[in-house]
Image (cartoon, rainbow, N blue to C red; front, side, top):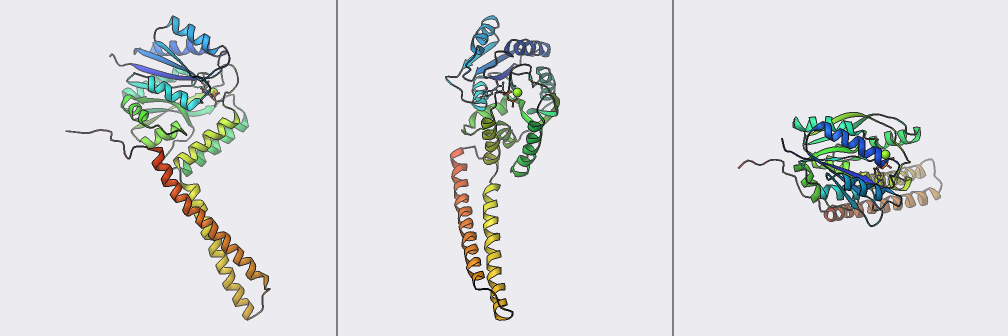
Length: 306
Ligand code: UDP
Ligand code: MG
């Protein structure tokens, strides 16, 4: 079998973890038995990461290292690696060994059995703060409730994509990227591979709170227009309530009596409802512009006969 695997690993200030990360990754890849390449993308590291990558690449011809001119972020780094990957399957993995390289063998097995996408599903998360686990738990559930496409719960970017899927992926050039959402958007035959997410082997998280919030927002706004429809619903609700208020107040005024300022209140509320409704309508146009600007293909053809 001369199919080739491409492993894409984004790295940002990971000098503490790189040597061990490479050793374990190489051992795991050797065990699988396919020819392989490892593509490291240095996302503008400011520590000794690049020197370590240069040394690893010099000693291992199957390793390619790319260096960004500055920190562009994890998702662009993964994209650069996928653009450079030449394999029949592309695997995306973090450098910090939280995604155990040994799990790749299971993903490859799923791929051999016909999976187009094999995504890592976290059974447990070790060594992360209660806060991180709780926010992640809530976020994944919110995301899957909001998204128009089923985005699997408790999965990150750790996954294997068949070449056909990776090729389609390369055509998606949207700027606010959320890879696991894009992967779900594409459909195909996606199979979960369960694993236990471990502690970082060394160093601290490179995902600052700001980067994390940006990613979370990209997930929701890039794959759901529900926030917009919510504005419309709230506006319509407020308007209906205000109109009902006017009717009830008028009826009361004719019988038991009502304070005059109540009309003023309901009219203000009705205007607020109308403003919200108008914002919802504008949002619908913005959503359509956003769809056009994202430029995703209209459809993805998986197979064709004749
Ligand atoms: N990373 C990156 N650019 C960034 C932030 C992170 O390339 O701006 C890499 C990082 O080196 C690691 C992966 O993305 O290989 C995941 O980051 P990290 O482990 O810090 O995130 P966490 O697991 O804490 O969410
Ligand atoms: Mg990590």
